[in-house]
Amino acid sequence: MRDSRGEETDEIQSVKAKASEAGDEASRTEERLAQIESKMNALLASLPNLLDDVVPDGDDDSQNQRVSQWGDVDALPARLGWTPAFQPLWHDDVAANLGGWNSESAVAMSGARFVSLTGPVARLERAISSYFLDLASSKGYVEVSPPLVVSRTALEGTSQLPKFENDLFKIVPESHTCNGQDAFLIPTAEVPLTNMHAGQILEEDDLPISYCALTPCFRAEAGSYGRDTRGLIRTHQFYKVELVKIASAETSDEEHHKLTRHAEECLEGLEIPYRKMRLCSGDVGFSAQHCYDLEAWLPSTGEYREISSCSNTGDFQARRMGLRYRPKVAEEESDGDAKSKKNKKAKKPKPVFCHTINGSGLAVGRTLVAVLENYQTPEGDVVVPEVLRPYMGGLEILKKVKKD
Image 1 (cartoon, one colour):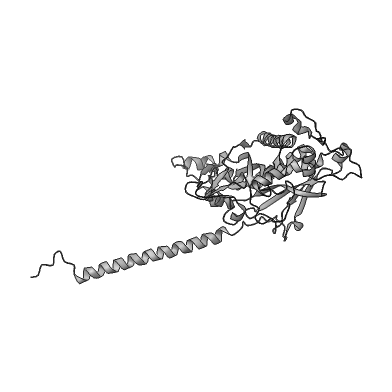
Image 2 (cartoon, rainbow, N blue to C red):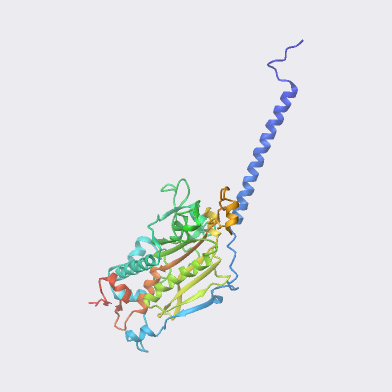
């Protein structure tokens, strides 16, 4: 009888061949599945948030809804002695008269849409920033000094990516990466503040969480060629105090209105007339389900311009970054029910997604624009708003520089 030990029979070879073929097919299937998942995720990431029922239909900002208006645009001019013949100057001309505007050197070293502020104007900008931070802290916001460089994942979490990559300043990989990922300068402190809790499960008792931060913001403004090329309205780099709240689903609408109100109080303290607009469906941001814009009065052009956007994103961002909270355990309905369950361990509720809210409190550069224009005098001076004087060493008037 032939000894077949150590030799492979035809049957064994056939089974091995089939196993190898099945393995190859499984690898090809996994590769195709990965491609499909990648395309699916890209498509899903391109879908904007679902809008709240209160958002009005509309095509563009001309169909936004005015919710309220504060202040009299003639009140400050009357106090400052403006006459009917006086034509208020643009903010850059006002700043130049104070000896604090230097755009030429900034453009020479950095390119278009960069500005250098000096002397009293730079000090006024710092005073505005400090006032905003102190006001936010008094409302219960925890001040944060966050990183200014973030990863691709962080920007995907707050939904700036993938849709708005052309508007971001990307750092070359040879210079720096974030844990092996692409690195970007922050377009707003919303990104690092919200991502502080990415991937976490919070307790409902710890909500809402309120953060504020003063940071420079960097935006390429790829889609704004030819728009607002003059002054500080639209620059690549600007300071902003950001307000962020992380809330439960039940309280997010209330917290959104609180945050918006806190931004309004910044303008009211400065006595800058403004209006509150509810953005229509054609103007609301990609990640927002409901958004208010605050628009400050600029007398040089006789119009209101956006100075803050306050958005409730619902669970849109939280889903992307895996940010959840565990609801509180419901109290027992009766003593009898409690007794029957005395020996049973209370079952923890499943975690649910948080809601995130963000807004400017406020954009510092645009606030500086509003202060310079609204507080200018016919003589070329600028009266310091009363709430800013403690931050200016008690200084009440910024004097026009006399030219030789």
